[in-house]
Image 1 (spheres, rainbow, N blue to C red):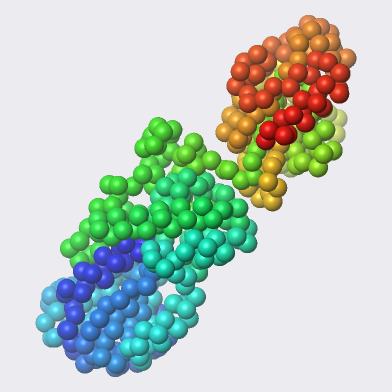
Image 2 (cartoon, helix red, strand yellow):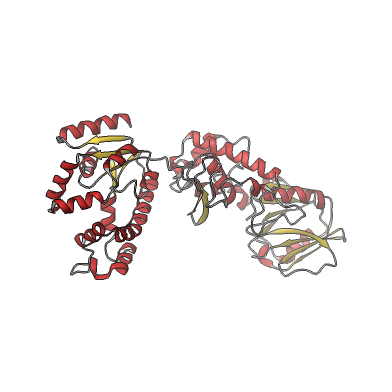
Length: 471
């Protein structure tokens, strides 16, 4: 879809080609293009009118004539062509203007999504009161657009920031391509709720918007897929795109591989290192089996903090009829089911800890679902601080969601003792389960904070309180 820079390129190009030219004939071949008048009215009103000015607001072109104005939105694939009078009309050319009896000015639209409106006025104040224009916000590159204005527009929006920036009533002129670039330049994750931006974020968005749009306009817009200006001008800004359409390529800032996701149904490109989900602040809690993660989590919950427990999520995700349940049963059949066709945790655990390849297969089914659930819970939360308890936090990549990480440590002797008592298993089985996970020493090296849970509970609580003061 042509965005503000592409529409501006069309506007400036047309200025040099149709201004002061008289419409001597109009033919409408697809009535629905005209949204507020009949084809006959449109044709009769514009015959003998002369193009005086061409303006633009956001993605709308505004043609000013002697007595009328035409508001044009190109939508997905609308284009204008200038052709000789004797050139045969293509089936996708829906409105044909004859100018000065010498030039054919044609509106081309493969999908027929574009629209035009006819207004009997040339006054811009009146034109801007047309419903489609009246609902638009300020242009993204408007020098009078302040960070306070943008912040106030977005602070109550419970939608991802990308969705909010695509909403033309909030900020006008940014489309899918340029929102990705603006979010990247502003170091904002496209899935972060708009309601969580700060004044600094709003300032960065406006600064980035003005910079990217100025560069794109100078380059003639972006030519991607079906868009060109169709008037002898092809945009070159695609050569300067930093993340858009760069999936699986290195980030220009840090080298991290750029990812493609879908936000609000739109393909979205971002760098997960440069554009982290910053709000709320997420503190990961990890450790090894029987090290005391649950003890730490329960204490934090009692203190009133929100705790996302991966184990509890797994329990919900593998109930009957869920995607995870179906995937596990499809893979392992009755080997993991009890008499009521529920997943038997003991049978599943036996498979996990006795066979490394099977363990990987199970993890590949469960971990992505839990990751997605955690990510959703974080992005939708109103909390400023969230704790996330994940046993395999590092192994499964959950550390990417965290700002800081607590590792609950314990001596191996105490760990074996607690695990044998809790799970009623032999020392040999306890060691098997402990050795199936990343060594605690390695997790401690990766963590921001370490809690020694080998001693009395009061000592563990004291350490938690000290960490809370720091974060």
